[in-house]
Image (cartoon, rainbow, N blue to C red; front, side):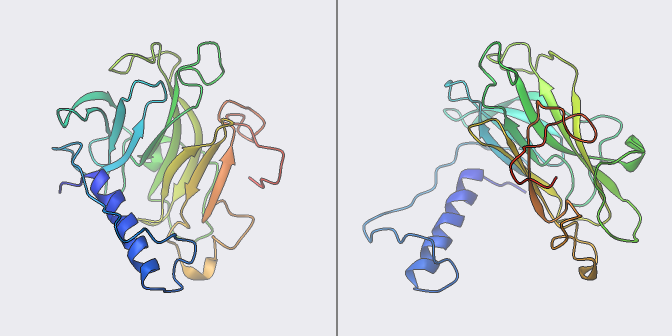
Length: 248
């Protein structure tokens, strides 16, 4: 299966614009593009199997990284040649890659290239692991089903942010661990804001509808969590909890 991320993103935009042009009520916030506005797709990479994320390295270099669901690889992209080279292989003995689970997302701390800052050299990932990898989880969905696997958010630190391959600085650090009792509706995306807070998109866990994980404020599932990954005020001591209206 080959997927070109730029094509997927533009296709989604085109669908949204089309629905808005039909004067539907589905997406009332979408602005309709002028009639002379044309959308085209441009292939920026090839030979990438099941990509899950495409992000710019925040150092002004224009370099991009692509994550791959099943290989657990992070690849450095050269858009000019549409080729990529291996930046980091994240797989290990605990890696879980069944069904649609695996490596989901990458996010760079805004201070990745700022020497001396707390976030210097840091980037973050969502990875899937077998439940035997840890007896302790931070969040578990309400369900009587057994745990199939874990979604884990990790922090990686590089020595040299300008290097084209991963050169380890501080050891890989676990930030958060989620128990998973079904496939799909997983912890799927990471995004930073300009203040260095990390937003974690957590699916509802795909467990029984009657459990209402997304509606429950005592469940972290079906939520967008906002954390400070270089803080330490959380229960597990591995991240900070913003003080302004963030229940998790």
